[in-house]
Length: 246
Ligand SMILES: Nc1ncnc2c1ncn2[C@@H]1O[C@H](COP(=O)(O)OP(=O)(O)OP(=O)(O)O)[C@@H](O)[C@H]1O
Ligand SMILES: Nc1ccn([C@H]2C[C@H](O)[C@@H](COP(=O)(O)O)O2)c(=O)n1
Ligand SMILES: [Mg+2]
Image (cartoon, rainbow, N blue to C red):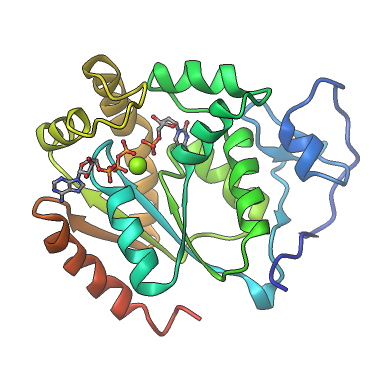
């Protein structure tokens, strides 16, 4: 089983307050603490790593990034069908939390309505829960990481980096047009929130894409064109990566 949650490295004793994050309660069985960014650290403040996966069974992970309305969800559905991936949308998982009246529902709703980013611990917990419950070794993680804080927290907690990162590059006016035309009743599909989301994308998500570009992991796809035209470019990426995908 690749779904083995194991501890990597030796870590110092926990000191914590009782009202702690979901991360510590649910992800952490051993003596760690969270720093002010919500990132695990040891007692002396150095980042700690807890692996999600056993080495032999680490899944193939593709992060799927792009601005609001760039077509991430649309293309992920097609990739999942054509290449047998499980599609996990961070936004969909957060919306499900809102509709299930979970303890974080109100906070998530307020954050999404403002076009801001939900704390990493909350989102990673939801992603982890899905990855644990699904028997697949190929995951598309859509809309995550949205910020360097998301990215660093995920890498520290899982001990892995994505195998590849798809970046759907789309002009802002096209993204606005698509989001306003979506008509799925999303609280954030209005012009005021879209403007905020575009700003958050440029300020917080582009640095993540730049980081993975430096790591040689980014496949930048021009998202302009019909859905099928864009998918042909995506298909080429996955065909080229076939050897890497178990
Ligand atoms: N290539 C395309 N051409 C025209 N419309 C598209 C294209 N791709 C997706 N759309 C439409 O644009 C809208 C937004 O697409 P989608 O939901 O896939 O974007 P997204 O990147 O997941 O956005 P968000 O980050 O807001 O979830 C949908 O209504 C979708 O049908
Ligand atoms: N990693 C994430 C992903 C999503 N969110 C919040 C903020 C987004 O505006 C909203 C909708 O996501 P989408 O469906 O557009 O991918 O969900 C977040 O806080 N952190
Ligand atoms: Mg989406």
